[in-house]
Image (cartoon, rainbow, N blue to C red; front, side):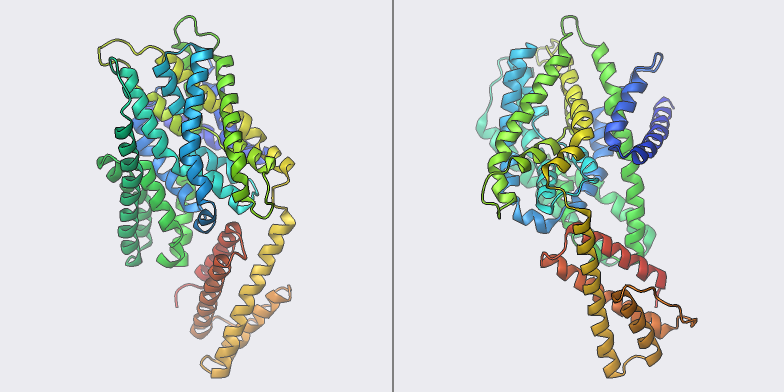
Amino acid sequence: MHAVGIVLVLVVLATSVATFARRWRIPAPSLLVLAGLGVALVPGVPALHVPPQIIGAVVLPPLLYSSAEELSLRDLRTVWRPVTVLSFGLVFASAAAVGFIAVAVAGLPPAMAFVLGAVLSSTDPVAVTALGRRLALPGRVQVLVQAESLFNDATSLVLFKVAVGVAVAVGGTVDLPAAGGELVLLGGGGSLVGAAVAGVVWLLRRRTTDPVLETVIALVTPYAAYVLAESAHTSGVTSVVVAGVLLGRSGHRLTDARIRLQLHAVYAVVVFLLESVVFSIVGLELPTLVRELPAGTGWWPLQSVAIAAVLIAVRVLWTLPLTRAVKPSRGRLSWRVAGVVTWAGTRGVMPLAAALSIPLLTEGGKQLDGRPLVLVLTVSNVVLTLVVQGLTLAAVVNRSGLALEPEHTAREEADARDELNRAALDHVDGLAELEAVPETAVDRVRRALTARLDRTPEAPDGTTADDAYRQLRHEVIAVQNDRLHRLYEEHRISDTTLRLLQRDLDLEQAALGRT
């Protein structure tokens, strides 16, 4: 009952904080972390200890799946090279840099210093996605940041396992060939499991028309991908990401408008609750861990700042040469793109779960030296990035000049709507020539489409919608759906515009009912 009470309190706290965050236009994750810190500092509040298995097996799968579904596969194809470099090279470089600085400024044993480096080496997909929703970044920049955070898990997990193995072993050494094989097993095996789960789910959803059953399948999918991959000793995170990316691009072909709207609403609630609770936990954990620090570790705030600065510096140096791939038309390096990509790469829930899973004892039965400090430095860096980078990210994007102007987005949306309405009007005119549809239904639909093209209100004609009219409207929406996705594949509209217009078409079709 105690755990249930804590969860309920966190949900109430998160809902209140999210309300104020929207009103004040502040990123909710940053405000939730601060709220968690504030609650933890209140006298009498019990210490919070969250098992890492709860974060890994319960919280992460749906959040990762939702982030992966939002990823633009079209834009990912254009930036896969820099994503690969960041997912491997930057992870290794960050782990090494943090390891060296942790030995120098924090006095950690070398083995534990590199455990800390492995924990903090990768960006967090949950935090990156949650903070990036409010930004109007160009598609390639947004996908670069988001895809890197989704696909660098296998690399950082292998580093973490190797580092922990050395730290707990007596006279432990690093077996590089074995580590390389484990990296292939985690990443490749997780990808295969995720693809297999996506294939099975695709077949099931193609044959399902019950909204309740469809919702259950969608909610179970990320957990199935995670558990199956972990059971096969591969990367559960990679499996969930691959399944989400593959199913996210085919959602409009798997279900009808009514079910898509329901799934969107259900997942919005689930993601809101889990994100709210998990970011609050990050803030709640820090004071508890600080109280458990041994004597002589009072310099941890400055040490944490030094580690954060090193992570930012290494990230800038690695992202700068890759900016040509993000903005190829410029033909030169872009400090503005490097700055935005660096500042958007925050740490979050996954480093917290990894740090909490560090063993308490060595293989010889002795207490693992430096573990409490590693936990504090990890969580303090997570808090630092979520608060400092989170609160200032929008300003950095605006100052960089990369943010898409609202006029640009509105113009793209208006042009796309006109394109859809013209395609629908051509289809209606063709049916009228064939006399395949009653003339009254054709006239009603034609008047409505013409009014939209002329930017005039649709005048109601006082007639009821008969079966012929509804059937024609369904046909028109199908034509518009087809044209919408063709515009997207031709790179004429952004992923944001695609999702907005797809939702409008779904709402229109759901309002018509079934034919």
